[in-house]
Length: 422
Image (cartoon, rainbow, N blue to C red; front, side, top):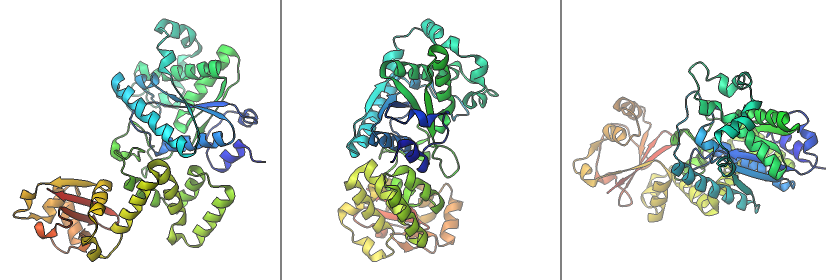
């Protein structure tokens, strides 16, 4: 008989856990996870936690998602080496609405419902003095300093608001246990210190034994975690205005063979039998990238919908088709679709009256940071215009415009940029 703990372990969805986690998960209970609204979008790391909650729903458990309207005003030091930017209430409120909509959409995809709460609703009722008396007395400074999220900040200093973050998160767990009988908290692995602080606080205050575990962090190519307070370009966001669906799809399709075997287990609801069959077929012919394609299809449809997925597949087939003649005679809608999905820029048609040197153009639109980089790419025959290889630093003028207003630039096999000339 399948049970949730074995399912999560097999899928690699448990990183750290408190002792006896298996015992508390023998029957359905209420669990929760929190997201601070430090951005107006979740990212692909947050998506893994959503998928974990979907598994719990499928097994009959009762997940709650807590939006940190209060903790978002404070700032979590976890995973940061400098002070967080303090966001104003209006920004946080906008972010909360956006994140809620994303969460509802993701759960609707699986025909599941989710309860959303906001910790500001109860934290706003507590005075500072009352909070110190109710919560602060149970946390020693030494205990807080021992946590990695605080310890790594001690050399350069940590502001008191972030130092106090664990207390507020601990109180959330206490409150949800009291009103919802919540017994388990889940978070990314950078939240382990906050989770265990809350468990220890509740033990001291009530004598109750509560539980927690963390989901592995999904990291970027440089090993840094995805985070809502990161720069837009550093993340793979769920919001298509921050990360285009095309970029989202390309991130997934280009995951290494080593990682994709992990991700197909972690990010999909395929059964164990289906996944083992896919892995076996993939290993026999890795050049077909079967696992990457399956993962890309599942997650792109989940996050962006079937219609957008079909659009991305069309854009991808056009961009990676080596036939330059076909590219000149696309449908008008195809050019628009490409423009909406890959890095782009707009240039005034007047600038093309006398033409622009390719090296100057590549730097001007930000495709390269310097003319030196542009020259090097041209010299190495790595630049293509409208799918045609360019051998020298030539003059780009109106004759390169296709579809009435577009020029497609390409560097190497996978880097594309489209110009709209108006």
